[in-house]
Length: 364
Image 1 (cartoon, rainbow, N blue to C red):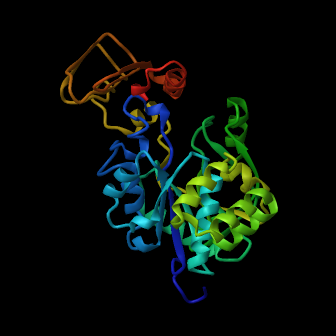
Image 2: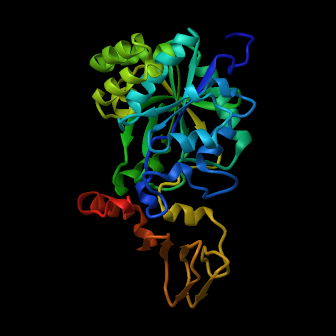
Image 3: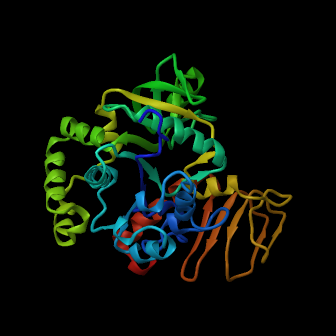
C-alpha cells in the first residue's frame, strides 16, 4: 500500500444489530438505541456512517443489522447499496457477523482492509477520529496484524473493557501506537482504579481494523469450527444467498469478536485516541453529555422543575412537573414510564429481562 491512501482498500463494517435495552422505554426491538436521535443531527447510526464521508465511499460500506429494523435502516441510509445492508436472521454477537463480512470483502478485494465500527457511539472530535483511523489503517495494512482503537481512561469505569499495553509505543502519522498484551472485560471498581493509576491500560472502544485475510486466518487458528461454517456459507454465496444465509447463520455460536478472536490473536496493536469518544451505555451517560439548566436538570421545554436538581426528563407528549426530587431519570413514551435513580440507570436493562419473562410483549 506504499504511496497509496491507507483507505484505498478500506471497507467499513458497521455493526447495527443491538437492542440497547438500557435505553428502555425509548429503545425497543423495533426502534433500538442506534436509531435514536440522542445527540446532534440524525440517529447514532446515521452519524456513524456520516463520519466516514470522504474516507470510505458508500459502495465500500456494509451495515449488519437485524430483520426487525432492516427496512428502517435502508430508509435512513439510502446512499448505501441495499445488498450491503444485511439483515441477520438471529442475533449471534459480533464474531459471526465480522467473519461473514470478512468473506464478503475478501471476495471483492484480496487487499481488503476491514474497519469494524459499532453504530451506537458518540465521537465529539471528528478531525481527531479521522486521524486515528488513518493511523490504524496504516498499521493494520501489514498482513497478520490486528489493530484496536484504545481510549485513554479518564476515570475507573467498570462498564468498559480494558487493554493492557506495552510500556513503549511508536508514533504513526502523529498517533501513539502500543502493542497489546492483554484484554480484560469490565473489571470490578478496585481493579479499574489500579488500571487507571498504572497508566498502562486503555479502554477498549470496540473498533477493530484488520485485513480481511488476517481476520479469517485468525478464525482458522482460534475458532476452527466457526471458520469452517463461515467458509461453507461463503462458498454457497454468502449474504446474497438469502435462503442459505437464513438457514446457516443461526447455527453460529453466539460470541463476541473480543472473546472469540482478539484475546487469542498474535500481533495486536492499539492506537491510543483522544477523540471525544463515548459509548453512550446508559441514561446517565446521556445526562452527562446533554445541555443542562441552572439546576443541572436535563429537560424538555415543556417541563417544570421546582426545588429539583440533577434530573433527566425525556417526554415528547406530556408536560412534566418535578417537585423536590434529585438525580432521577424520568422517561415517558406513549405506553410506558420509567422512573429510576440516575446512578442506577445501568440497571434499566433488567426491566427488559423481566418483561421478556413475564410480558407484556408489546412493551419490548
